[in-house]
Length: 176
Length: 204
Image 1: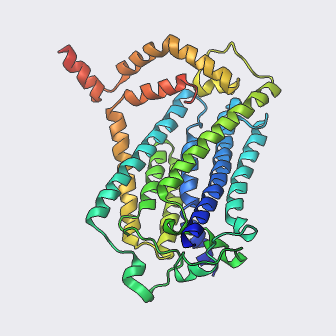
Image 2: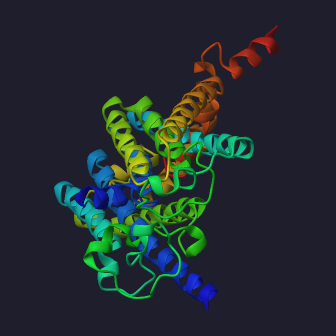
């Protein structure tokens, strides 16, 4: 079925995470002046920090809530069209990553941020469709990712001017 | 035998992913620098051509990764993905109907772990930047825009000059203005920031 093939490609481990990483990497270089570029570069810093923080949160949750994957619990009542993942189901780790990036970019550029949010939602939907996650797993992952990005934004604001000094230093080495 | 197959599968996945990540990050970089006009990182000396090349590189990277199992032998899903497993597969070419699932391999069966994806992407992105900077030396010379007298620094310096000229200029500006810039940033910090609070306590 065409939808199955499409869902398997979108749900794969490489395509969407790579697309999000590429967008985050590219936004570092976008901006017609220093002010605009700095806004995007701050969002890259927020995104990268949020991925680290949210993965730590996921590890903590995994040790306390070891929710089995839907194909383990539901068995033959559902058709799995993806490989059998062996790690806990809740929260969906890939969603944590893509929603962290989408939120971080949204803070710098609303239009691009919304586009990434839609792409991340499509990724979440495909992961549920192929049978590797419950809907609540991907919702939980999205919430953790978004909250982590907002917390990191607040942290960077609180730590001002340290991020600005870091970016100034990187500018001195020609990379910001 | 099974362990050997997993190791070969893993090496194949890593190699192909590195090619994909390099092409996609190089393409994304070209699109970004064509938008911001950073000529020092352009692969070709023309804005529209740089952007078009960027889009083509992204398409080429994804196309290679998705369709390579059709002509390259490997541990492709080969139909086993239908029953949700990724082990015990035959080593060979994938059929076109299996393409969508061919790369979906669990990391315990030769696929890659999430941290490996992240690490290899960062490596590829750095490589793509260095490659663009190296090629940029020639594209800037071809477009005859190198202006060493300009006082801009950082990425801005690459609007008119190549990366290595921009680096020396940026270091010079950092040495000259770095301390003043840091002080200015410190003064501009909002009063609720930790730095401003410490400064207030220190004064009192």
